[in-house]
Amino acid sequence: MQLRIYASTFLLFLAGCGIGTERKTPEELKAEKLQQEKASLTGDVQQQRAEIEQLRAQVRELSALKDKQANPYELTTLRIAKISNFFDKDRDGVQEKLVVYIQPVDTEGDIVKAAGTADVQLWNLNNPSGQALLGQWKVEPAELRKLWFDSLTTTGYRLIFDRPEAVGVFSSPLTIKVTFTDYLTGESFRAQQVIEPKLD
Image (cartoon, rainbow, N blue to C red; front, side, top):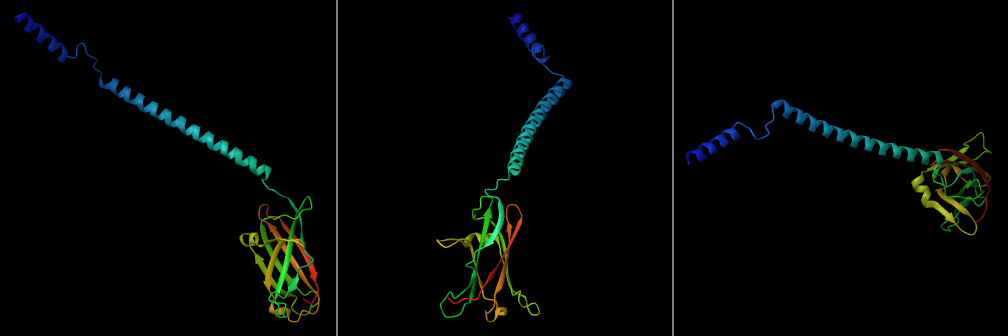
């Protein structure tokens, strides 16, 4: 009986001394902690490298699109339709509205609904000693896109302006000048058209 007690006591003593179990020194524990931190940092670096490569791929795609100039048209000129003139819109006998039809034209010679800004001027070039510029207007892209007009007689942007007070009696030819700035390329196109007095 005493022998069993001595044996048990001895085993407990060995366990208490750490014999038979794995005990780590402070240096070993510190080394393990550093190893774990290193593995964590290595994982972060790999993730960051993957994210950088993904961003580089996106930049390459965007650069390719820019080089291709994802532009559905290429403008070559601008026209003002001949039917542009003053009109009596409410049929009261007064031509109170100036209606200007502008037509952006592409390389195929087609009229296209190109996004852009339209700067319109009305001139009396036969009155150099008086007021030559009778009126001017600017139509921004957001508004211009709503003004597309397509009929049997003409196609293009239909711009309607109030008759300037400086026009007075419309008894001699006037000149419409339009500058169209392409929204996608920033390129400007100019056109002018003479309008003659007429009866509605």
